[in-house]
Image (cartoon, helix red, strand yellow):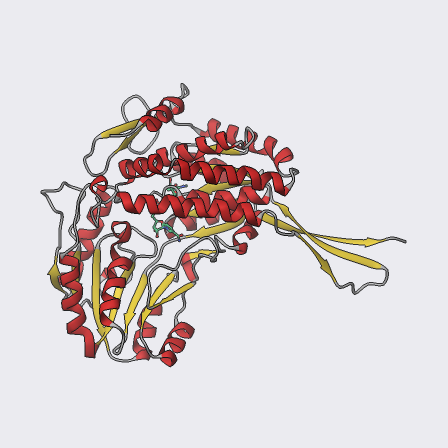
Amino acid sequence: MLDDMTSRLTDRITDPGLLPVKGDFSGDGRLAVRDPATGELIAQVGISDATGARAAVDAAQTAFAGWSMTLPQHRAQVLHRWHAMILDAKEDLARIMVAEQGKPISEARGEIDYAASFVQFYAEEALRPNIEGVTSHLPDAEMELWREPVGVAALITPWNFPCAMITRKAAAALGAGCTVVIHPSAETPLSALALSELARRAGFPEGVVNTVIGDAATIVGEWTADARVRALSFTGSTEVGRLLYRQSADTVKRLVMELGGHAPFIVFKGADLDRAVTEGIKAKFATSGQDCLGANRFYIQREIYDEFCAKFTAAVQGLTLGHGMDDPDIGPLIHDRQIDKQNAHVQDALAKGARLLTGGGVDQDKGPLFFQPTVLADVTDEAAIMSEETFGPVAALSVFDDEDEVFARANATEYGLVAYVHSLDPRRIYRATRALQYGMVAVNRTKVTGAPIPFGGMKQSGIGREGARQGLEAFTEIKYICRDWG
Ligand code: NAD
């Protein structure tokens, strides 16, 4: 089912220096990439070891001298070409993504547009002034602040958005004048290699963009220990984020961490209920539930609870499950650990008093990685699903009585990425947006992301922001110049 581009790419990326490493690897030491919907082997990818990881930093460090001194106009031009090539290859990239990640094809196409939008945004942002004057406090001195690229940036990305998480980081770093070493997740190397190949064709000089596939701990461990890597931008779980935070301490790297989420979805009485149901379906089931912005906990005010449960369950029962190329609502989960987690959260919630309204397990007719869209009602705060990221198509519904109660329950978590609020009362909306300890608050809607906004979380959902002007901060240093003409 994969087209010409994939086979050309997989030919090109098979390299002779293969080593056996941890992960889903075939006997000959290559990384096996499988279609999660069918289990079919779709490619075998050459992998690197610690030597390869070091060689990538060598190349990036050498290229930095030239790339960081190019005119911003030049960097913008190359980024614009990359942007155009990503859009030209949209169908190829979307199909590659469906094949290795499993998401529905229309979501994959949407992700390519989203991924490309960061490249366009930072092509334009590269041209903005990066020098600021300072009103002098010293006689005869004149002062300026320059923003300079930090150096080599390591970019570590997850499998749930295999293209957008790369471009959101890489376009900012490259636009700022950094060179990059990229390590994608072992589940989705083909999307990363395709983007990297398009970057080469767009004209990034040798060594500016380097993608390294292999055992994550080995590759990333090499980079965190390397003092030449000046910034590390990570998107993934809070658990691995903590580890990389510690590993980066010895070389005092600039850090961006986009980590886990555990979004509350709050519906107050008086809200547009049909709209809340529609937006709730999007917030829970997009990316088959495997989304850091996924609504994990639904808090519904008592007066509308039964009606919401009924309408939401009916909507969930209408969702389709299938292979991503058939464009269902929900595709397969990425691997069996994800299935185990859904089962564990459902069984735990039921044991603690929840009621199963629909779904509840694997759809065996579809295959072992297809989990039925599931709704649980009357879920108690003691259930694991109310405090842990589920990262799958299981919705937990719970009732609340008043504002103070729901704000306290929504904030009782180590996470703080996004919160959803549904209400038509402006004062209530104001109080909610003030009270919720989240980096992003969505009111009466689900889609809030895009290149112009600073994406990121509070508490242990992350450090720093991606997208917008703020997305450049980790990749640049401020140099203060104080001149006296004597
Ligand atoms: P993960 O933490 O397992 O892996 C993310 C990346 O880290 C991958 O490239 C992986 O190869 C690498 N990695 C894994 N173990 C490592 C180790 N020991 N040392 C070094 N690198 C290691 O996360 P995942 O399962 O790929 O993605 C799901 C998680 O990502 C969820 O928690 C989700 O909320 C989060 N996420 C966050 C955002 C955001 O922007 N905040 C976006 C997407 C996903």
